[in-house]
Image (tube, rainbow over all chains, first blue to last red; front, side, top):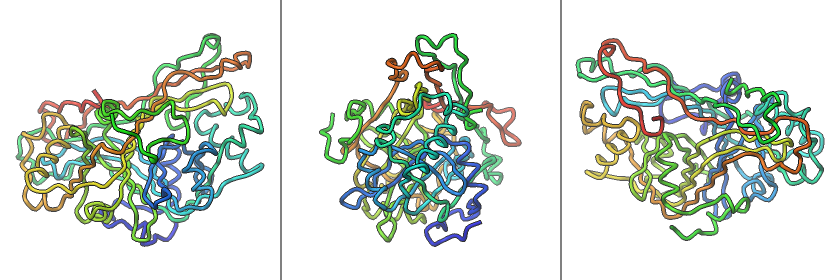
Amino acid sequence: MTAPTDRTTPSRHADRTRHDRQAAAEILAASLVGHVGALDTAGRPVVLPVAVAPDGDRVLFHGSSGSRMFRTLAAGGPVCLTVTQLDGLVLARSAFESSMNYRSLVVLGQAEALEGQAKRDALRAITEHLTPGRWDSLRPMRPKEVAATTVLALDLTEFSVKERSGGPEDQEESGWPIWSGQLPIHMAVGQPVPEPGSEQRPAPDLPGALA
Amino acid sequence: MTAPTDRTTPSRHADRTRHDRQAAAEILAASLVGHVGALDTAGRPVVLPVAVAPDGDRVLFHGSSGSRMFRTLAAGGPVCLTVTQLDGLVLARSAFESSMNYRSLVVLGQAEALEGQAKRDALRAITEHLTPGRWDSLRPMRPKEVAATTVLALDLTEFSVKERSGGPEDQEESGWPIWSGQLPIHMAVGQPVPEPGSEQRPAPDLPGALA
């Protein structure tokens, strides 16, 4: 449990908000992608998708060392990393009560650019999150590939988790004559598509987020 | 086609980038959720998930009039709205060549807070995007509900679309003895869950993004 700050105390739906690391870890375990917000050179917000992976009390993400955003964040620029799982549409009898079911994690702070063995360990953790059991079988990373990648770690210190689940809250309008309820949504994985030469090899395990 | 600006010309993978409105419209048609980046009072980035809907040459999103972020954006604060569809994992024989297949739209600028009939039209467009054909059957919005909602429109003027598809680019390492290929990922919808009293009513149509 982490003390909420002014920035992680929502102005709306405080009842949907949690600040415990277990809730954050559960969202990260179920997620492959997050959206990272940084500032451009004029101080305006820029948001880009990144692969994310949990790593104890922090979250890892990585990108090209040539990326403007990653250079900015590696230099200690303020960051907001948001990870959202859409769980369904909530269809009430009114537009106002209609909503979405979701779990979202918002992490604020400054990221740390990892180097040396910590960087290699983080690259392994990211790969293992996306493709469990695969790291040891991959062609090992070359030094120039490690150098071309920036790996950032963001501590789960200032963060909030917001969740909504269940049906619409429109019981008072149960006489309105239309369907009311939920449409569940989830990520689904299709049949693996092997490259030529891989048809006879066993397909990889699914990430936990999709299993 | 919109002229790229310095901010929408990526520093990496320019070959994956497009600037045409058709590509942007296709991503929005396939999406229910985006991530909006704004500045907090200290000028730091904050990123939150929002429901999004296309509306001609602009994108619509809405939230509570009491939300700090929506107040900031309604006042003309700089915004970045990013919409991402994850299409799969790309599993190369090396970590460095492994990637994701995705389509993402990044829109920059200032949003316009809609009022009056334009606001009601936009609320209808958002509802119809999420739940086609449903607006006319809903209990009509009350004036206080419209007032409690901020509806923002962001022009598709300064934007970029980035896409990756296909298998890994690791043919030069075809001798490395592991599976190489793609794991396709998509959003899937489960069985509708009716509220008590709705079991005998026809379930709603799926949004185009899920159909």
